[in-house]
Image 1 (cartoon, one colour):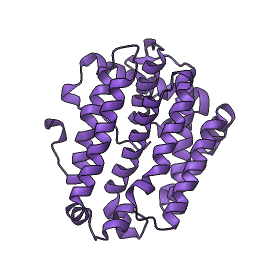
Image 2 (spheres, helix red, strand yellow):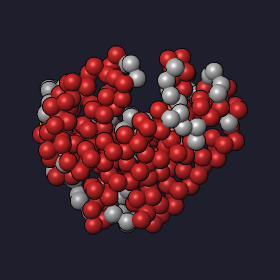
Image 3 (tube, helix red, strand yellow):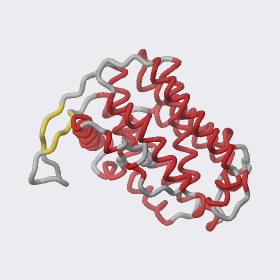
Image 4 (spheres, helix red, strand yellow):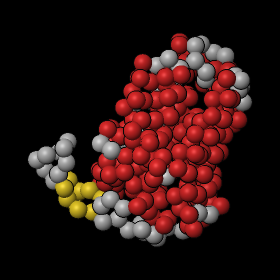
Length: 286
C-alpha cells in the first residue's frame, strides 16, 4: 500500500500501540526472511494494520518477544514472531513496492530507478507466492490501461486497486474469507487509491501526469477541485466509511479488535479530512 493508513493516536490504547509496533517490527523481519534484506526498506505501517486484521480474522494469535535489530541495537523492542502469514504479507508488501516503483519509472519519476534494488526481492516473492504477484500484475495492468485511456470516472479508476485488495484478502484469509471480509478489503483498496490520487493532485497536474480527479474536475489545484466537487467527493468517502463500518459489524474476530477498529473507524476518516481539506491538527479531531 502507500503509507496512508494510521491510527487515531490519542484514542489508541497502550496495549494496541505496543501490538502495532510489534507487528511492524515482526513484518520487517518476515520480509527479510522471505524476500531479502533490501526489501525490508519498503515496509509501511499499512501492512502492519493488514497483519493485525488477517491474524485476527484467521484466529492466529501472534507471539511477541523482545529483540534487538540492526536499527535498534541497544534496546530490545517488542517483535512478533515470523510465521507463514507474516511471510506472505511480506511478499505482498515487496511485490506492491516493486510495481509501484515500476509505475514511478513509467511516469518519469527519478525514484523509479530504485526498482532494481527490489527486483531480487520481487523474484523471491514470486517464487514463494506466485498468486500474489499474478493478482498485483493483472490489476496494475488494468489500472495502467485506464490511465492511458484518460478515464474520467472516479469509481472506474479506483476499481482495479479495490479489486486487487479484495483478491489479496481472499488469498490470505483462505477458508476464513467471507463476503464481508471481501467487502472490507475492497473498500480499503478503493479508499487508498482515491486518497493517494487526491494527495498527489497538485504534483500530478504540475508534471502533466494522469489523475482521475483532474480528469473529472479539470481544476489547476486540489483546493479548487475539492471546492468544485465537494458534494460528490464527500458522498464517495462517506459511502466508503459506511461500507467499512457495516462490514466490520459482520466479520467474526477471534481476538480483541480495538486496534483495527481505531484505525478504520477513526484513523481513516481523520486522514481523509487532512488530505482532502488540509486540516493540520488531525489527531485533535474526532
